[in-house]
Image (cartoon, rainbow, N blue to C red; front, side, top):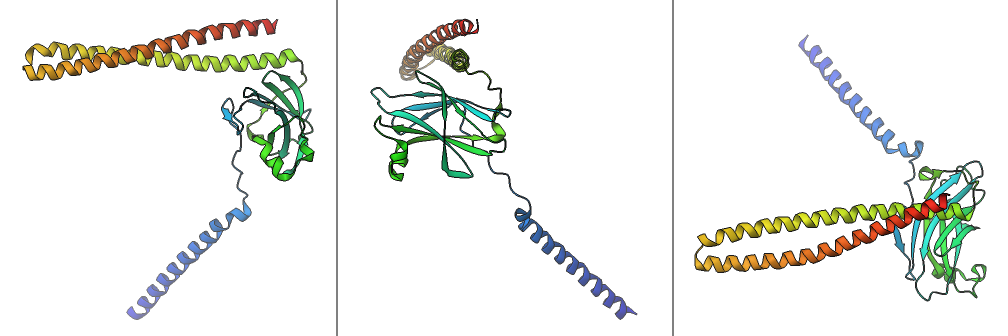
Length: 279
């Protein structure tokens, strides 16, 4: 009777470990091959908004906004392209879809005033996924279609990337110069407000640091009568260094305060300009 009990116990333990092994094998096969059954979402590929990008020729470009009109199937891009002094290159824009990177399409230039551009891409499908706008720098005598692949690659200044999941939905019925100018002024106003807030915070932090230095200096000066001569000499040197540091911080504070005043004046002018454009 005991032999039969031991036999049944052995069989039960064997079945348990066999079942556990099958469970782990099935789990490994499922999770190891799940990528074949469940497609992983592609990572977002989007050029940062309002961040200055330095190009290979010394110029800078700042992307302000992407917008997509689902009814008209048009994409609009607003950007600022600051040229270097003496630059004679013409800028040419083309765009490609991620799925067809070798098939460039033309870009419509809606607004080109000073260094401000508004680009429009036509017939963009709702499921475009990801695309890139390429910016070329060409001599006046050059044609993009006449360039060799190597020359074309060398003339490419940068690419700006858009991802369908992050694009702002908009209505593209208006295309007048005043509307575009107002949008750029709004961008500049927003950026100026950000810079002004940051500058004001720096001024406040600098003032607090000077206050702490004054407090430390005062405490050291109060301790002087209670120190030996050698200690007094050492402490006076430390007080002198603190005073010199305070002078440096005071000069920096004056520069920061001047930048705040300049930004406040710029902010006021931009607000006036925006009101004028809105009339």
